[in-house]
Image (cartoon, rainbow, N blue to C red; front, side, top):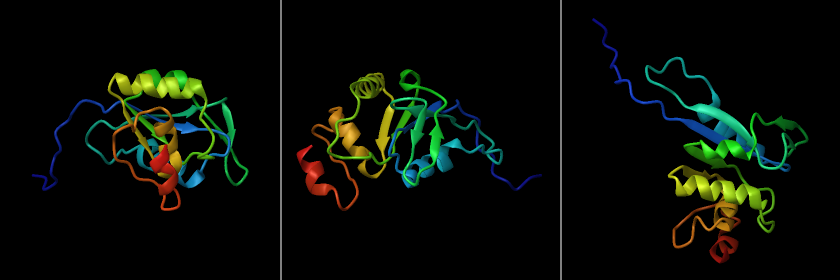
Length: 147
């Protein structure tokens, strides 16, 4: 008899979509890839599907000069259950309207929308944080209060 605790099988948690864009913050992006994008054969339950979504085009030049090739465009946000916005490249720049509309639609249908660090400015630009509390990088709180 095995002493290993068996976790009951449950429904697959669905698609996680992480955004990529020119000026991508690689640390925050890497967190999302590491947590959700790696196969987890050690788990005895369904794991997430994962895709990289281009906010602007299939290829993005990340901080540090390397290129990220996205596997999907913003249309993939229509079926994502979880959307992750890594730190945004410029908190004073309004994100593309098509991206904002896609995130808003996903939120309206119940998708989880989360950000890491300054990615909070994308969610704020979309109005998703209106009347809510949110946190961001320690260098950004004054700006985020006004957003």
